[in-house]
Image (cartoon, rainbow, N blue to C red; front, side):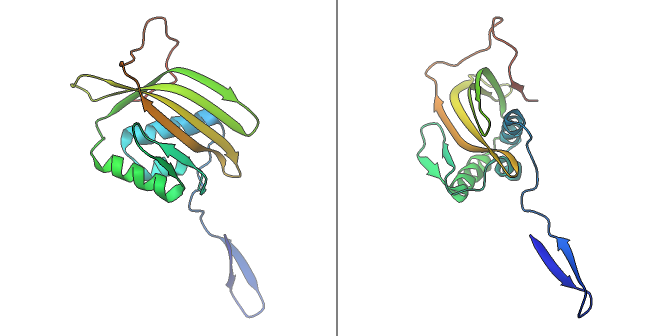
Length: 164
């Protein structure tokens, strides 16, 4: 937003106010890396910087309801992070990507674990990114639990994300 500042009755200076969300993600992969990094660190501000600020965004957590709109999605992540997920480790495997000029779809398996504790939990996730004026932003995250935990095998390609 640009706000005029009056320095004298006849002279105006324009100052650019800092945007609420000025961090850009130049590629869908950058947005996805930021999403999983924020998830693992339980960082709500970083998580919401990845999401498009739009009433049409959708988030479905495993076994949860369909949430629409920025505030509903933000509230859900705030609730998840308030549960103390700071020790959570997350790795994505078996990534499949479909990319267009303005929309990208990533399908991954999320392998979630807590160091020193078994078992791991596996979730199948679909992440949709849209190219906006502020770079690539997440518009859909749909996660469903898998009945069997997934584990990377020697035959798997290197994971897209291994977060430390």
